[in-house]
Length: 172
Ligand code: FAD
Image 1 (tube, rainbow, N blue to C red):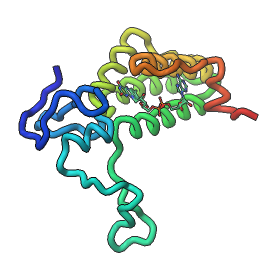
Image 2 (cartoon, rainbow, N blue to C red):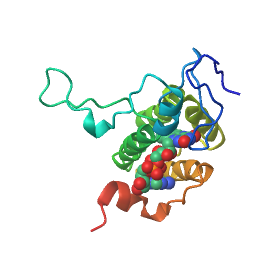
Image 3 (spheres, rainbow, N blue to C red):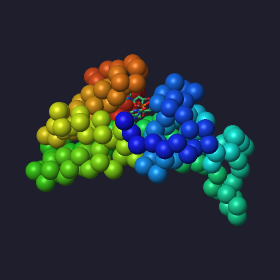
């Protein structure tokens, strides 16, 4: 029941990916809430030029014309940040560090740019309070939270016994 407008160039309920198109309050398609494919389908602001052919920003030898992230790119980067934050969380945190981590997870869910993703994460936190008593506990809690999203999206669940290999120690 997200707010949506009807003034988009190809205003639609469902995109080519089969997923519901999410609109911002101003009626424009939300880039960080939709897949790139769906966003491009309903938005006239994106040229059909592939990213790889867009070249550098005018006047720069270094920076490419990279577009803002879609829901998947934003998600991969965000999980990397979250799991890496957990991977470097103290084994024995102070009361202050526990309080801050708890606040961080709550605030993160409020400011997450894909609003419906953030809302679900907020609900998850309400029903499953962040386990902030140690790195191990936080890592497992986050792995379970990520698996909840994996399940919602029809993806394979990650084996949380391997969380440390993936995010702390590496595989060798
Ligand atoms: P990702 O799910 O991004 O995972 C990246 C890597 O993390 C994987 O390659 C794997 O190595 C590792 N990994 C996978 N599962 C786990 C786990 N359980 N524990 C530890 N490591 C793991 N997208 C939506 O479409 N709808 C949503 O409602 C939604 N909610 C989100 C909520 C949050 C808080 C975040 C951060 C992202 C959300 N996303 C959502 C994005 C979505 O979870 C994925 O990031 C996105 O679909 C890209 O998926 P991916 O297959 O590349 O791998």
